[in-house]
Amino acid sequence: MTAESPISASEIGRLLDDGLLVADPIGVVSSANNVAVRFLGEGLVGKHLNDIFERDEPVGDNDQGAIGEIDREFTFQPESVVPRTFKVRVKKVSDGHIAALVMDMTLQRNLEKVRRDFVANVSHELRSPLTSLAGFIETMLTNDVEDRNTQIRFLRIMDREAKSMSRLIDDLLS
Image 1 (cartoon, rainbow, N blue to C red):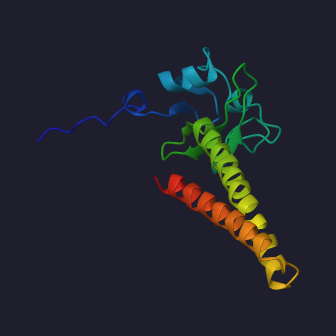
Image 2 (cartoon, helix red, strand yellow):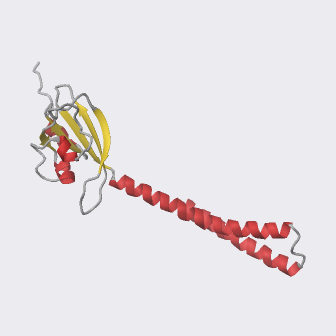
Image 3 (cartoon, rainbow, N blue to C red):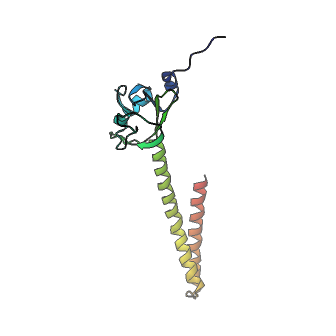
């Protein structure tokens, strides 16, 4: 039986859709996968993790810039032409080296904004006919409308608004 060599960091990096940086025990990057280069730019090898992520609070925790016991997650937004948001998970691995997984959260952030805008628009579109219905119902219940023709006109408006809400809900469900 032969002992197989463990999989290398570069082999793991090629398998990932996220950026992967591997740094020595003091935080100097020794390898970066293609995704990390695409996210963060060229020239990552040889840089310190603190310099790459431009942290006010260092990723490491001792005077020489070494990385202490860490298992941290933080959001990093580099200055670039296209604003992007990354979640970075930094973990000290068993041999003392440091792995930093860089996940692009831009799409997720944009989807959340689209969802918030959608909910706000739907809410507005449903509240308008509902407010109209409530106003006509309140007017009719307080007996302020004694004229039968006005009552019929109000009921037709209420019917139209109810059908409008029903169409909006059908559109949402489809």
